Length: 195
Ligand SMILES: *[C@@H]1O[C@H](CO)[C@@H](O)[C@H](O)[C@H]1NC(C)=O
Ligand SMILES: *[C@@H]1O[C@H](CO)[C@@H](O)[C@H](O)[C@H]1NC(C)=O
Ligand SMILES: *[C@@H]1O[C@H](CO)[C@@H](O)[C@H](O)[C@H]1NC(C)=O
Image (tube, rainbow, N blue to C red; front, side, top):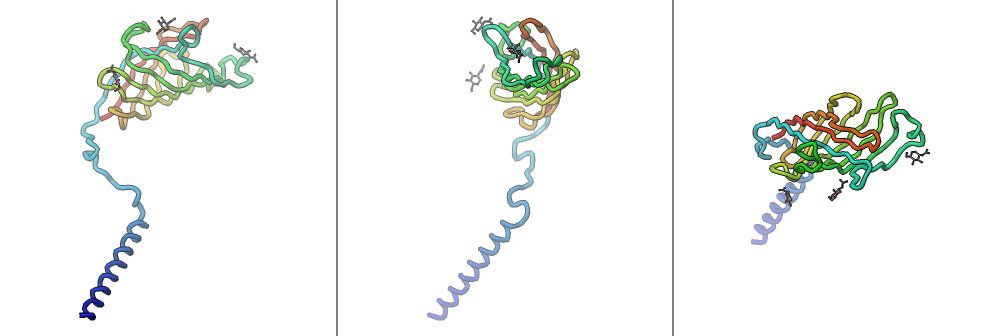
């Protein structure tokens, strides 16, 4: 009886050591923090192409400013291209050029004067949609915006919500720009691939 118990104990001990060994072996294999997943597991079926069209209201001066300068270089004032200017925005997006037209969301981010040879902006923008089926979803744009060109193309680098895995491009076209107030209305067309 005692011998049998001893044998059983030995077997358990061996099993225990083997378990520990296999755990430590698996945790040291490469890729223990990552795995390959089938797209179906995330509910990803067919990629689709969507077109979004709206107007962006950039208000630099007046009562309801939505764009504020947060930094500039000592040389920005004397730069013909405002090189070094950094502006933080929380601009409204509407369906039509009139600010009173239907609100579709906000664009929050930063633009900065990044060119010494023309007025060319570095745009870092999150478009947060707040209307219809895209309410709560976002698209992120990171690109170059030489504002004197009629149509500027900026890459869409990602998104969230219904725009997960998004990629594409945005076309920005100035609708109105007031040189005195610096306020602008910009027409945006976004072409985006997403699931
Ligand atoms: C500023 O916002 C208020 C409240 O939304 C609005 O009533 C007013 O017309 C706006 N003023 C301008 C100059 O857009
Ligand atoms: C630069 O321009 C801003 C706005 O036009 C003005 O308030 C500021 O005093 C100027 N700074 C210098 C150093 O000229
Ligand atoms: C968008 O979603 C927010 C949060 O769920 C909700 O409060 C809001 O009413 C929605 N807006 C529209 C226009 O459906």
